[in-house]
Length: 282
Image (cartoon, rainbow, N blue to C red; front, top):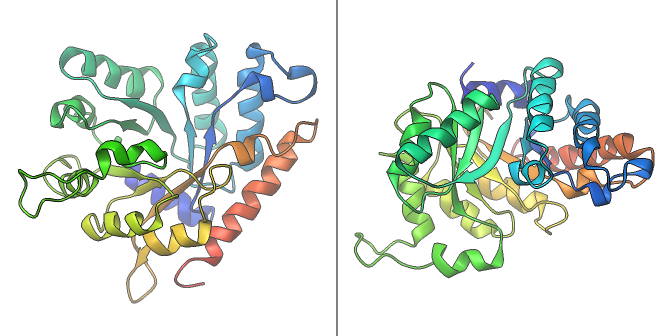
């Protein structure tokens, strides 16, 4: 299946809008694993096994692996996820943003080496950044649009004097992603949960694109406000604009003891239910 079909299928099968972010920090690992970077795979695989029936996606953040020379463990983890949860798409959170032959290599890394179903990109250098990734049929390309960090306003909230209507930068990105940039029909946007009003604005401008929404949980984003702002349905209750709500630290580090996997499952289940309760049909 192509990315958007796989995402829709996982959301229906697992009754979930929740994405679990895999951001392994060995200093936070439980018990005897604490500080051991060679247990990154073991830790993340345990989280995957505990939550695979509760999520619509997994999102490994590549920096947490590369910083510990654990790219081989990421490859093993990607293979593990394909084996135990083939119905759940994997979004590689890489935030690449280069052009030309360098972008070609980043696309190969994401889709050939790691076999990701989708990847996050920065659109700052324009369509050239995305083009090599869009050449992979059915693969998702998720652009940074209105991020959850306070400094995102430094650029994303500025108005563009040279564009009709003087939209804000994030509004222009949303319109381009809904329209001319989306050449393979598999584009999505990153919008932070800490700005629900702007989630709603992005949804207005990009009514059908999947929105990847980080910031729920440890970053303080409100699950109910997030769903109400970003999830849209038609008169029959069918989803017309879906969201993928990411939670990382709140799930991964729900416990520092040997029960970390069962604690992660409990928090993931609670978050999934909170998101579901906020659905328009709930």
